[in-house]
Amino acid sequence: MSMDPRFGRRARAVTVMALALAATLAGGAWLCPVSEAAMSDPATFVEGDCNGAWQGPLEVAADLDARVAAYVPTTMDPSLAHLEAGEQAALAKLVEVARIMDGLFTRQATPCTGELAARVAELPAERQSAVRRYLAINRGPWDRRFDMEPWLGASAHPAGANYYPVDLTDAEKALIADHANGLDGLTTIVRRDAAGKLVAVPYSRYYGPELQKAAQLMREAAALTKNASLKAFLESRAVAFLDDDYYASDMLWMDLDSAVEITVGPYETYEDGLFGYKAAFEAFVTVTDPVESERLAKFKDELPWLEMQLPMDDRHKNPNRGSESPIRVVDEVYSAGDTRAGVQTIAFNLPNDERVREAKGSKKVLLRNVMKAKFEQILVPIAQVVVAEDQLPDLTAESFFLHTLWHEMSHGIGPGKIVVDGRDTEVRLELKDTYSTMEEAKADAMGEWDIFVLTRANKGYFPETIFRQQSATYLAGIFRSVRFGIGEAHGKANAIQFNYLVGKGAIVYEAATGRFRMDVPVFEKAIGELVGEICTIQAEGDYAASQAFIQRYAVLTPELEGALAKLTHIPVDIAPVFPRWEK
Image (cartoon, rainbow, N blue to C red):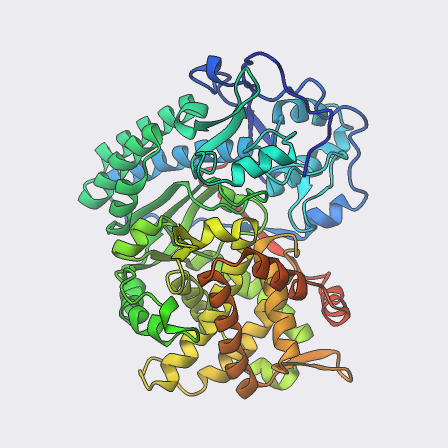
C-alpha cells in the first residue's frame, strides 16, 4: 500500500527534519523538536522528500470531540515512598529515557511529522486543543480504532509506517520479503541509496543522536542505583542502543530483580503492517510488588507440561523451550512510545527474541494499576450491558487478572522457531503481516485453555467455580477488545475469537434480551479446538492459511455490531496521565 503520491523522494541526501510526539494528553503541545542530525552518514542513503507532505486542506473529522471522549484521562501516580533516594533518582533518569523512546516511535509511525506540525499550527485556535490531544493518543493523523483511517487530512496510512520508503514498488516489496537480502532486520530502517537501491540502515545510525543521549542517561541511572541486577541491565542496554545487539541485555533483563523495573527499547512489530518485520521503540517505567509477584511464580513451572498438552500434533511441540519465565506484578510509573499509542497495555510478555526464549523463556509483566482502572471503568460497565444478567455475578477482577496473566504466559507456549521446506525460520517471519493478529488470538484463547487444563488435571491452583468466572469475564473482555477496532491486532484477534465461538455454539445470542451468554461446557471444548487450529497454522508457517483464517473470522457481524452500538456511552480505553512527570 502506497501513501499519497505527493510524498516523493529526493535524488540527493537530505537532513531529516524530525519532530516527535510528546506524552501530554491535556491539550498542550503534541510535538516537540528533536535532533535534526538523525543520520550519522548521510552519504550512504537518502531520505524521503517531505516538500509535498500534508498539502491541501487539513480537514478534521467532524466527530473529533466524540473520538477524544472515548479515551478517559486516568491518573497513574503510584507511591514511590518505599524507594531509596538513589532509586528515585535513577527512576527519574529512566523517565527521561522513556521520553526519548516516545520521540523515536513517533518518527517510526508517521512520515514527515515536522510538516504536519506546521499545518496543525495553522488550524483555528479553538480546534487545536482537541487535535493535539487526539494526535497524542494516536501518535499520528490516523485513527487506530478505525483501521487507521485518516481523521486529520486525507493522506492514506502507509502500511509500512515510516520503516520503508512510502513509494515502494511491488518488485521492491518482493525483494524485502526475501529473507536472504538483509532488508528484513528487526532493528533497521529501509531507505534507498543515491542510486535508488534499497538499503537497511541500523537504528543506531538512523536514530544515532537520540540513542546516544538515551545510552548516557542509562549509564547515569546505573551509577545511581545500588541494585546489581538493575545496574548490569542498564549498562548493557546502553551498549545495545549503540550497536543494535540487544541479546545480552535481554538476557540480563530476564534476571532483573529490582524495586525499579524498566522495559525499554525496540520490541513489538505491530506498527509494521506491511511485513511485521520492524520493531517499534517503547518504554515501561515501573515499580514492583514482590509479594504479589512471588504468589504467581509457581505458574512458570507448568509451562513445559502445558506445551506437551497442546491440542496439536506432537511433532510440532517443543518441550525444551525455556521455562524460567519470571512473573512480575508492577505499577506503571510512566509509559512511552509504541505502548502509549492508542489502546493502553495492561500486561506484556517479552523479549521476543527466540534465542532468549529458547534459553530462558520470557518475562510476564502485569501492570496492576492499569488493569484495575480498565476493569472498573470499562469492563464492568460493558458487562452490565451485553452479558446475560444471571452470569454477571461470575464477573470478577481476579478472573480478569488471571486471563491477562495466562494470555502473557501463552506467548511463551507453542510454535516459535520452526522448519519450513527445510529452512530454519520463525513463525513471525513466515506469517508476516498476519503474525500479530494470529499470535494475539492464540494467546487469548490459550490463556483460558491453560486455566481449564490445569484445573482438570487437579493441579490445585483454582476452584471449580473458575470455569464460570473465566467464561463470563472472558466474554465481557471480548467486547472490550473488539472496540479497539478490527484494524488493530488485538481487536481483530478478539473478533476472530467471538465469531469462532459463536459458530461452535459456545457464545449464544439471546434475542429477547439483546445479551450474550456463555455455554460453559461448550466453551471449554471449543476453546481447545481454536487453540489447536491456530497453533497448527503457526507451526506449519502457513501464510495462506493464516490469511484465510483471518478473512473468515475477523469480521463484524450484525450481532456484534449491534452490541457495540449499545456501548457508545462507555469509554473505549483510558488515556494515562502522569502528573509527577508531565507538568
